[in-house]
Length: 150
Image (cartoon, rainbow, N blue to C red):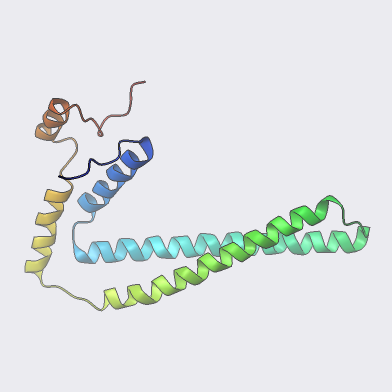
């Protein structure tokens, strides 16, 4: 017996996004490029936020030296330092993922196998606006394609 997929709004949003990515990028090459771009954008964003936080931390340190006060600034400084540490950890993990993904890019497939990818993608993530799927969803009282009307 299979377990029913979670019906919470977060999971439903994930399922819709998952299916959309399969539908819109149904080949191995497209999935490789999509994941690479996603990884790079994540690294860029984390790097920029880390850089901005480091600048803020330096400004707090400068102000603290001028004012010689350690009251409320220390809490802010501690929070920023902890956040920078966490973002640096995330960036380290992202570098490791990048190294693994480079191996994925070494994999090339024939046009015939690409066709198989597209075929399987159509089975895994059929078009949510396909009339047959809409009718089935209504029949089974499962409407993940429509927002809740509550």
